[in-house]
Image 1 (cartoon, helix red, strand yellow):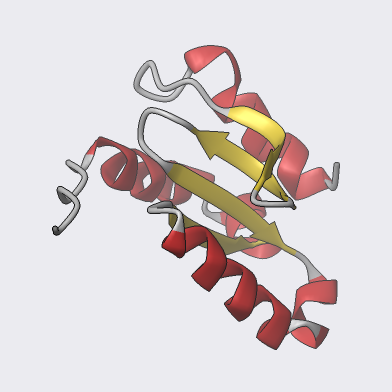
Image 2: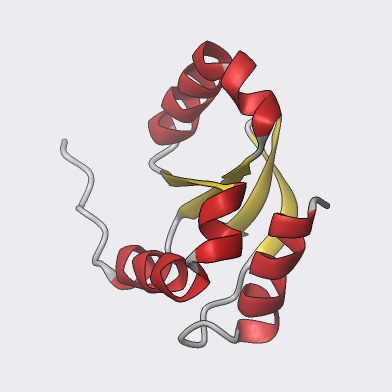
Length: 104
């Protein structure tokens, strides 16, 4: 876990954010996601410098996860380290937003 992931995990673990249960390093559709809230169908990814070189891979991965009806949020390490309260607010807002029913 990177330093930024550790900071975010301390804020998410043990249902600390609005009572939401997040898992760390969850395997979904063959990918390991940084954090996952099953009830909200929400994936949180924390991106460090390596992600600058793999933007296309990350885009494809996000599309596959979205195809599984998951929502993906990405934050840079610096966002976590500098603006943690704002990041947590964004995560809570998205997690508590009702899911759109599946179209038939």
